[in-house]
Length: 458
Image (cartoon, rainbow, N blue to C red; front, top):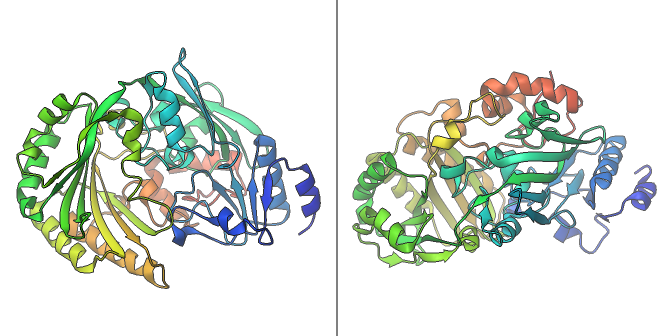
């Protein structure tokens, strides 16, 4: 490739190609089926490196992908025969300013470091539910988490970002500086540049919270639906829950609840009494350090598996359809191919209180649901099998044919995110799409950043 040696000489970080011993490691992602054979993996050290990598890729007509945490099952952080701008090796720190209650976070950081550094000062921000997820992908796609009920989405707590745009410029985006770009990146993903630093608003956070796992037999399903509906109708800002239907830890069918209460164990158990009255067969809930909350799901979400996830709107939580879906889940699941139906109950009052025109993110007035399929033996056709099962189950759970928007669900869960057609982006951004097209034309008119709901420039 032209000018490769010149590129390597000027580049301060690490460049990995197929001839290097660590090439396979450089391609590794959370989901093995999301790995692609890039021509170059550029582990950037700073914004100047990012600009060099963009320029080199453009000169050599190499498609670009941006890797932060590498957590996209759709493959948005990988690039077949392209160049990957990888921030995970050198731009991964988190610095806390306790007086201003701000976190300065590298574009390649994981939530693990943010949680741990912030809580040292009695502070926290909205993260996800798995702490080896990248900060960048979660934030740029919206960002739900255990603190959403109290503080909204992760993007609602983004104060400022530093980006390298398509022409190599380093720009700041905030409410007062490049506000059009700030609007766009809050939900618009990697369409507008490479974020090298996020500045996040922090909030006071108690050191310990009530959290953990409850396992129930499938026989309580009908009562579980009733209890959940009553709880959800009166849910408060200190709580949240994930409900998972699939195989339990022992390989038998189970209903697994991951519950959270931002308070003491005594308060938490009282808050969830109606669920305890259903008789869990396993109770692993207790008061734990806050920084461990987002580590609780890590074991089940470990790297190196095949992954397919399909989000959709949970606006039809109804016993008969869940029974039908659960029967199908059990019939197709095995220890090597686990199908999980997860209802995410993060109270969304704060989320939908933000005007639709404030950020690029499409704010839907329904809780989330996601089908998460994990397999340990990757084989040709497994991803397509998982896709068929996921779409069938989404139709069953919905109780009727879903509209396009309902079938789409949460953008960070969409399995077709890497589609380069503008139609997926139009669904993702709804009424904000035309405005985003105009911003795209200004910052990336040639659409070189096109790995995540690619927006067609106006």
